[in-house]
Length: 368
Picture 1 (cartoon, helix red, strand yellow):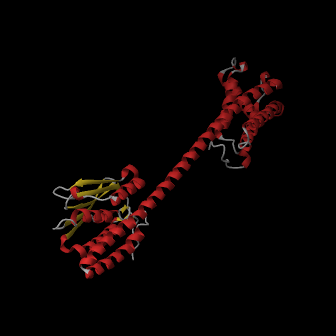
Picture 2 (cartoon, one colour):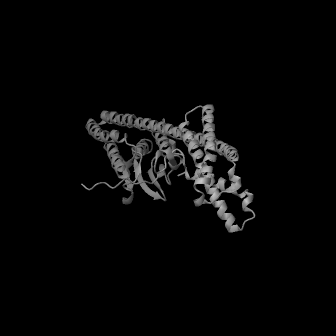
Picture 3 (cartoon, rainbow, N blue to C red):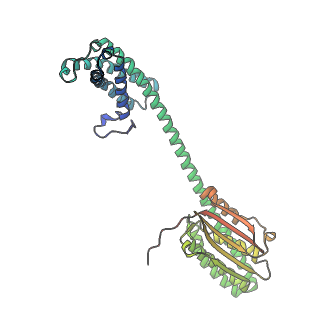
């Protein structure tokens, strides 16, 4: 309600006539009454009544100056400082000229209503200079307060613009990271097809068909910002099906995900990347194969997803690490310190990759 840049309810000319400014002017008028010697010798009740009447009359006479100054302040908001100060000074001068005229009008025209003013108020020259001095002082305070408020608003706009730029840069970075994961999947999968095509063309064709089905879903999903956990698990199972063609009984899969976490949200293709990493570096190089385990759980307000293998462990890890670096960068971009990827040695063998991120749920799906 005390924002001078927003119109009050009613006529537009009241913009800038805020409750705070009205209250300040009235308070100044009442403080001036405390220095009136005519009230000091009177009984308390009579003195209080006289102060209230005369202070109210003083307030009514000061209202035109407040209106002039407020309207000039708004009208000159975009003016140069020197010109604005000059126009505000003219507004104060006009209000100071009107002040004694209004006080004399109240003295002779409204005396039956407000009572006769004391002799102190019968000097128009005193009215003029007092109102000019006080009006100039209050207007100066208003001017510098308005400039301070304008500076703060400009700083706030700058901060908001910087936040928006940061958001756009983060969005662009995220899109780049998500685009990067598609060729990563594709190149590694095609390498698997090439190896199998040389050894067993029939399985190679089957693998290629499964790969085509997988990529139709995976590539489109990589464009999403987030996906449901159950959808990502289904995609990871499809990806595992590609490797099962090649590895057969050497690859075993275990999934432990509570049903209540099925609609939890997470960035797309992260589980698939961890599954691929576990197979490529942990299970595939091992003659006896091994097990890939996928587990999801809730920790307070966080979602945890673990992909573990019982393969060769850290000593077999090599390569550029594009997939893991991509996951870390996406988690940092989306969640800051609330998202993380950690790698740890398994209890007996292999590696456990753990993702932590804020727990959020997708809206319920409409019934078919």
